[in-house]
Length: 381
Image 1 (cartoon, rainbow, N blue to C red):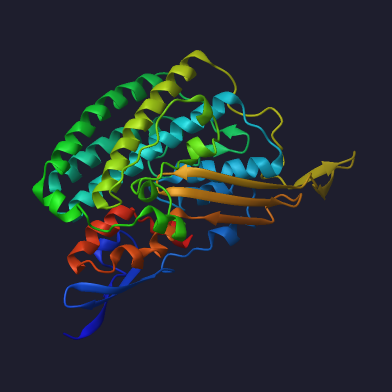
Image 2 (spheres, rainbow, N blue to C red):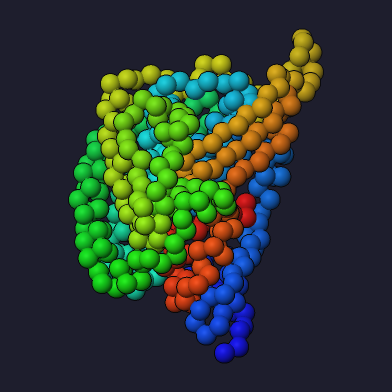
């Protein structure tokens, strides 16, 4: 039987975004795979060099359109380090609140899209229903459901309105019951098990070799999570477990994400308890007022002169829903960063596609790529 290359993209429904997967096949067996990116490149890193520090936050929401608040947190931490700014404790807890709610919203979005690729329509509808509850909470204090522009250098834009913590608790109770329903619909489905068990295997040593992180790494038995191994914000003050599995296949990645959502609920309950008992400021007192105002009047005549401030470097790494993301910010003393660089976990996870696709069948591609949880916006940037 002759070999041939086929294109699955850039408009194929399996891709969940604008990219192309080229696969070389013989009959139904995959012999080679080559991911083609660049269809969604917008030059966010270069654009950031011409924006004031707080203006870059708008770009972060559009870097990953299902985990925008996590990318805000990633960038803000690097910017604050470069600018020598320390946020108040309440702001740090609110940031963790938003990041864990974003993790839940992202994983539920993954769940809904993933099961639909397998032909299970009911879980898709249930997942989108439950995600809306989280977006309602986001909207109540950020004004947005997809792009938020909520975090600021030195803290957050505004405090939580009255009743937010009670709404979070109610939603968490609802979701914990729904997770049981998710498992029953999937793990109890013969279709799901036949299409996911022992498929798309990527062992721990291969994950480490390629730099694969997040649920894919933890599904291979490696209990690595930056919230534990390199704590940021206030994660070192919270109790939670690192979700992991040993099968290293599609089912293992499902199990890890479902367990991660349960741990996010555990974190959120601790956070809202702390917030209820600790009122206080949500912005640092000595935030540089030049953010967005690069020139200042000097002297009695009020001449405008360009400001100059202490230089600094900032590096941040967080456990965003897809894996380990990193940001590097260089402050040369001007009104905008000299250099901004990001590390996308999905870009790395997709770069190893040949390792977990070759040897399987063409029909296995949707569940395997679905288990990777592709967000093309952060891949291309």
